[in-house]
View (cartoon, rainbow, N blue to C red):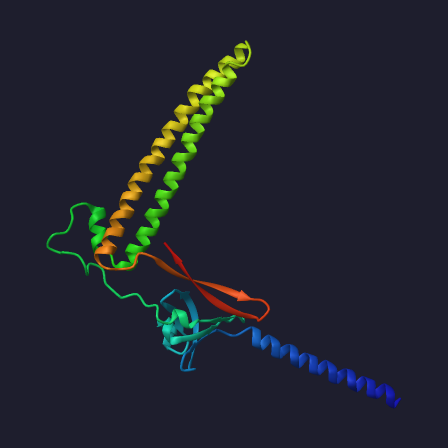
Length: 244
């Protein structure tokens, strides 16, 4: 009887200990909200809105109506997400802060360009220009790729059509081959020309944006923090990437 009671007590104690351990692990892995830990170890109870290479945008839960705020990365040690992940901000990112400028800061307001695009370039701030450059550079790459694809299709259609038209004496082969030799190059040529014009147009715009950034002595490359998670160590990290 005493042995049975002892076993029951041990099982109950083990169950309570396991339950306490489970609650502890859950409490550690799931938080009520995000937490920003400053380099001086002080903490901000927050709702993270956006993390960029320069700063963290968040809602301060300690402020009235959870007011929007931001903090520069060089002031942040780590970010504790409510999902349980931890993002450690490496020291290599601490010094990265782009020189701030405002819209129209570099523009000659008495001699603005008449062309709408040129005017938007000189009136944009440098961050906006870097975004413009990435956009038009990618569009020019798409146009160049489309040109290659459609011109290749036109050439392949022409060769294939000639081969089919001259393979045997069947009227159907000649009809289909001749149609392919004419329609394929026309289709590929038209769309290839459209893609080529888009390539030239977007490349020209990208070059204008690049020239404006160089005039301002502003860097052209974009910086990006890519979050990651180490499964073995159960911790997150940020990777600083450069895109040219």
